[in-house]
Amino acid sequence: MEISTSLLNVNEEKIVKTIYDLEVAHTDYFHIDVMDGRFVENDTSEKMRKFAEYLNQITNIPMDVHLMVTNIKEYIDSYLIFNPHIITFHYEACKNKEEVEKYISYIKENNCKVGLAIKPNTKIEEIKEFLPKLNLLLIMSVEPGKGGQAFIPQTISKIKEATVVIEELDLETEIEVDGGINLENSKKLKEEGTNIAVAGTAIIGSKDYKYTIKNMK
Image 1 (cartoon, helix red, strand yellow):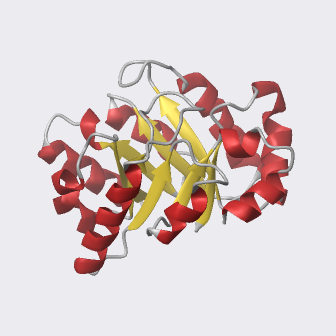
Image 2 (cartoon, rainbow, N blue to C red; image 1 turned 90 degrees about the horizontal axis):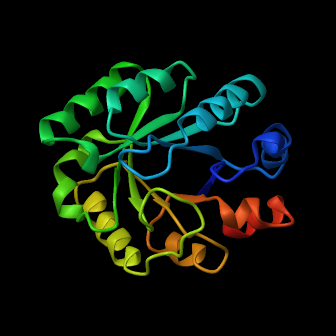
Image 3 (cartoon, rainbow, N blue to C red; image 1 turned 30 degrees about the vertical axis):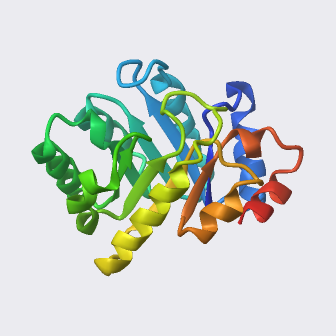
């Protein structure tokens, strides 16, 4: 299992040092939580754009961009310039399934991997038809919008279900889980088929990034 460290709650004054420290600690990805104040209550647009600029300048560790926004196209365009490893948008932010298809194709056409995120109440069955076209399925284990929330236990059965479907369809689609992940629950996530775990508070709030990331893996 790989680790994508969320920079959501990193203090702006400490971002450069934090990036270096996380690089030394062997995070696999930097997770950029882009919120517009509309799809979710918080607005992190300006902060995350600054962080993406720093990442682009000082590290080669891949950028994992998670868009929690309503104007998906505008934000895809604003992050493509940073050459991210992957851009993930929310199924629930789309008006219909045609729009989901459109954004999947658009991101791929721009030589970027594509992910689709689903909220805790969205069922795997609803997005099953898109799985063959995705590089990543992001399963939210908290309600999107703010860091530090507790992990929703029912997420485990959703990961199991997604793993079964991906295996049945013989796909290479990865499963990423985001929200409330820590040293206590990361082992279970790995056992059930999670490929990438997103952790913010558990890593950034720890005294030793390297120890925390190593033990999560």
